Length: 196
Image 1: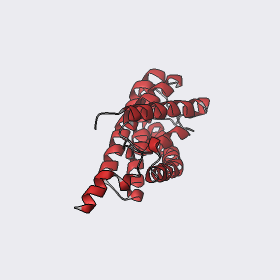
Image 2: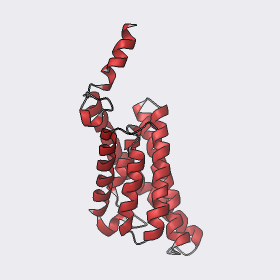
Image 3: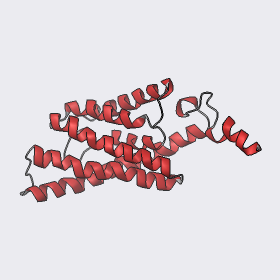
Image 4: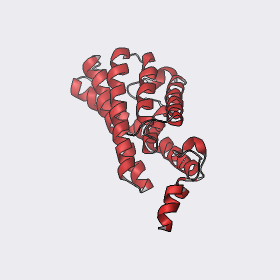
């Protein structure tokens, strides 16, 4: 990852704050193990554009999880799942250029990491055996979290992705990485390379 500019640091702060605010807005149902209502997870597509979204999502998740009933475990272990997923999503954004493939694969990581890690917290670290055995409870939570996470990441994250892409294409400064906000497909470097 490259060194963060002032614009990138500001953007990271906004992403982290949005994650926290969107999580707290839904109160206890944002932490429900079975059907987690956490629209903030739509923000997990942002590492496809912005490397600063990786630490922003991690910090935002840590702060949001302070209100979790699984507090200590969720703040540290749950947030590490978000960090790992954000890194994998960022890597996907670096490798793929097709937008549908970026969303499909980049969104897979938050779904998979949350579906596999959060039940570890609930079942093995906190001792929840709501569905009889550890295995039954783990896989019930994993399936439920995979479905709910997929809703937030794909149903809300895909429109967010294409909205951000549109703003970047228009050269809206807050969404571009260059200094003057020129549309990314028309930067000075690209103009120079086209003339040679």
